[in-house]
Image (cartoon, rainbow, N blue to C red; front, side, top):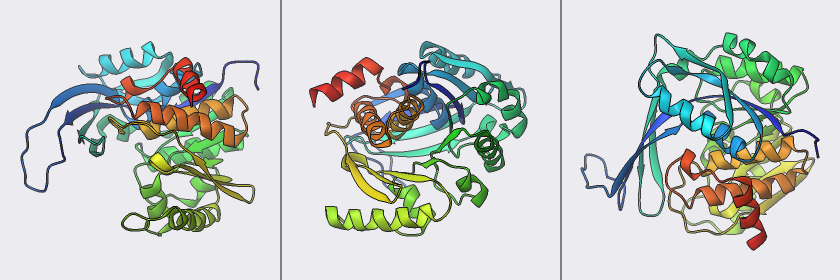
Length: 317
């Protein structure tokens, strides 16, 4: 374990989430009545940074927001969680990114993101934050900012020997140079299926069918360049492939309220655990616990648990 707080830099998105809850999701062309509504700070990058901050990391965020009424709330949420926002720029030409989320009674959701200022994040923004990246233990990226910027960030970080975690969301093709620079690739089942070109088993697959699919997919993804692949499988847990080993790390059973940010909680917690020097499987268990806890609460950043909450949850299981 390291002697200093885990040092993490997140290069990613900041989005204002507009969330509507309803008993079910509307069908095409249908209008339904909802049960609740909320506005929250979000974006995969910011969510993962908040989770890392709440777990005690020395965390810097690199990204862009608009110089508008939404950005103040974004900064407030980040500061409350201990995120250093020095390298988040207010873009004079683009508004803060927004997101529309619909959540049903089971906690399942649909999401539409309008990136706006996030599309202006550029390699120069990475260079401006280089002092933080140089001292970081882990650099964490997603795909809600321009791909060339992600490529620049991960390749420069890898050249400096940094651990690079790439959460390949939203699902899309990824250039080989990014995958080659990635230490841990952390797709969910949809993203893994897209990257590998191997659809997840239809219907209600058995554990054996899911295991066979995950084994085949991780074999294919590892051949693309990352040193390890970790597929998050919701309530099933996370499938880890590294060092010639393949295994499912079981999750923690919970009653889900809103799974919007469960994956972000997982990635933020995994980054912290890896930066602390934990063994990979132990880091996955810690991340599984954070993701499970986040799924029991409404909203993105409001759902992120603290370290004491995660540890108490794990000790109770």
